Length: 415
Image 1 (cartoon, helix red, strand yellow):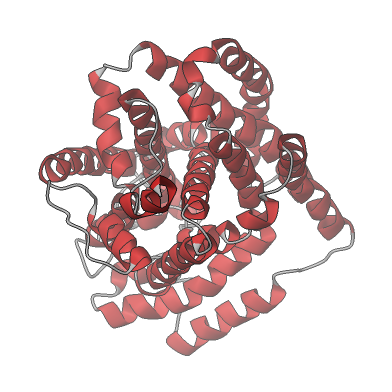
Image 2 (image 1 turned 180 degrees about the vertical axis):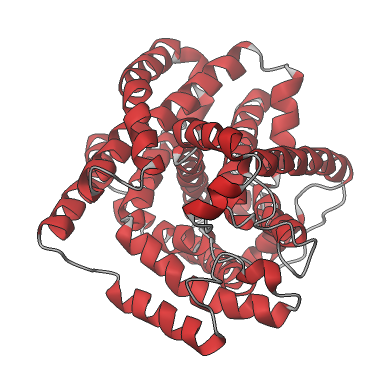
């Protein structure tokens, strides 16, 4: 009698964690990841990433920009996407286990939630920003039930194998001169030719277009460019591997046991930094010099520097949060983290408003150091707005819509 009533009581709610401190940990870590994601993405919004070397070096802030670029490669590039992916894996585990606990329709709920995330990602990709990651997350999230019955050991071995696999793939691609993304590259330049986008105006196109139609033309070819990035970067293997690590953490509820895991967390920090700190120097150098040792070496440096640094960030953040859970810093980070989906999309809207021709048109006009300052200001605004929003409402706007469409019922948003 009692068990049949429990599913009705949990409709639309996340799987509960033992104490409020655990909410702070995951939400604050997610907010921290959002900050890093913004720092990594805004050079693309600012079109700095697309500019050729002569244009970059001609900017007044060129000398400072070189230092900022190296520091971003060292401390940011790939590390926060690692955190974000692990957190998504944890979230998917909570969603899946919660859905399955409801009974025979558990998988339907999970796949409906992933399908809705996919639709949001595709809309983001084709109509807002070509750098979307949500669509890939949704597609790979749909694979998680396949791994549900794996033992913990097998799950971790599979995850590690997926993270290392791109090194061997890049080795084969380089050795045999393969072009796995050739079709998408051809399609990209085919659409560029249709709209008049060339190598010469590629970096400045979005800054010069003052109508959404011109921006949309760039987004069409940008979707094919994004597929090229996923294939050439073996992103699907990396993301799935990180998802499985997050899934392992989520299904074992390790996020709720961190205060009893101090020794293991310290070991993760020490081992990860032992690899990550020295190798990140060479990885950053490789990024700055356009993979001067070849794609295979670059891929190897990525695997053994970026992932360890990302894991070290997670473990170190958890240690600090356990010791200073009442700190205002973690509570402030938790607000944007509680509405991460809404803030992630809003970062794209901020990028359009500030840097594209349909907005203020700052793209290609400011150096990387100024883009970093703008990024920090945008995140500060998001943090303040998130705190204000959640003071009165339960969910972020997109999180609320996502929940309602998942469960097919109206959910109150006001507290």
